[in-house]
Amino acid sequence: MGKTPGAEMPFLDHLEELRWRIAYSLIAVAVAFGASFFLVMEFDVIGILEQPIQPYLQGKSLVYTSPGDPFRIVMTTSLTLALALALPVIIYQVWAFLSPALYQHEKRVVLPVLFGALILFFGGASVAYFYALPFTLKFLLGFGSESLEAMITVSAYYDFALSLCMTFGAVFELPIVLVALTALGVVTPMFLRKFRRHAFVLCAVGSALITPGDLITSTVMLIVPLYGLYELSIVLSSMVYRRRLRREQEAELAEQGIGSTA
Image (cartoon, rainbow, N blue to C red; front, side, top):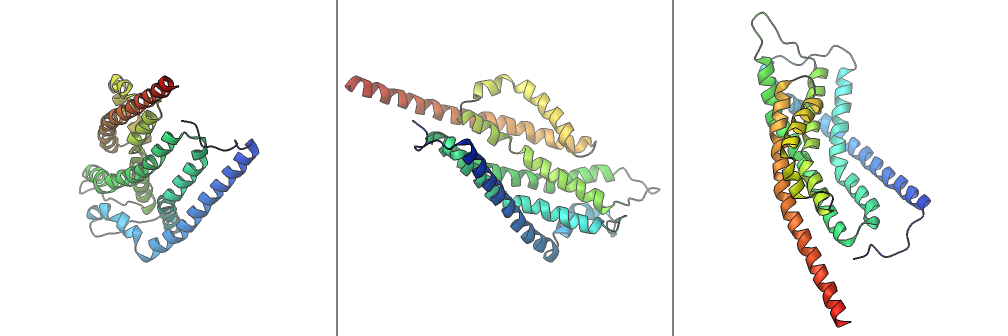
């Protein structure tokens, strides 16, 4: 099956289209940032993010050591939320730019893949917020004693919490990446099964590198779901691979039928 009909765009036209796609994405982020700033200020999003650490503050509040810390935290939280809200528009712009170069069966893969990527990102961020972050805080703050008093700064906490949520969200994209590569014929489930041991080592090393700080707890909390996602990727890859083989066999039979009647 051929690609989308129509003359191929000149290189400069591709650059012009890319420029507009980037511009649309930036506009979406800017609009989402305005909405996010309103949500953060009006609905106490900062307080929601603070909930995992509140049980360990003993009725006190997070402290800040610089006059600009509260403003920076609000802006950073607003920008992070804006990127999440604008993600569907950014994903659409990526798809719109790439779709003319794809085969028809590849186009059918793109939208489900991008939609799944969006769901998995928020799923990973939720796992970090509801499970990984509270577990890590309980583990770390459990080492205190009567002679030590925790005085956690708002800057240190929010940097850690947002980094952990973004890291988990990005890592949860693994199944989508591998399924997309299988659908496009780049990898096979046999290849993924063969390198299971290597994948586990890469999961461990990658988790240690990308988790914020030198915390063994957050690293372990990331290794387990990351390798679990790899195993899930093998199952999904097998399903996609069988469908691709079946489609190729049907295409071959159709070509043989046309050849025999010619």
